Length: 101
Image 1: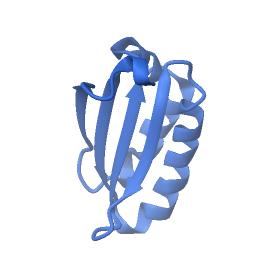
Image 2 (image 1 turned 45 degrees about the horizontal axis):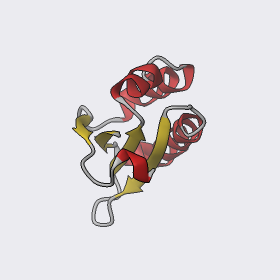
Image 3 (image 1 turned 60 degrees about the vertical axis):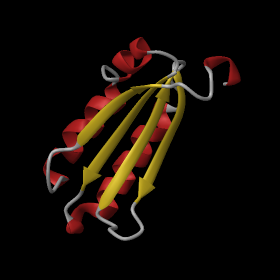
C-alpha cells in the first residue's frame, strides 16, 4: 500500500467551505479503483488544522488520482483558503500488509 498524509492549515473564515470541498473530493476519490481509504480529520485543539490520510494500492494509483477532475478542482478551489502551504508526506505501508486489505 502507498499512503499519503497531508496536513492543511485553513484560514478560520474558510473552514466550512474547506470541509465541503474536501468531502466532495474524498467521496469521489473513494470511487477510484486504486484508492483504499481516504480519511478527513480535523484537529481537536485547532479546528483550522486538517489531516488527510489517503491510502492507494500503489504509487501509480496516487499519480492517477492527481490527474482526476475532482482532485484538480479541489486543489484549485482551496488554494487561497490555506493559511500556509499544505504539507504532504508519502509513505510505503509496512503494516498491515497488502494482503490484509
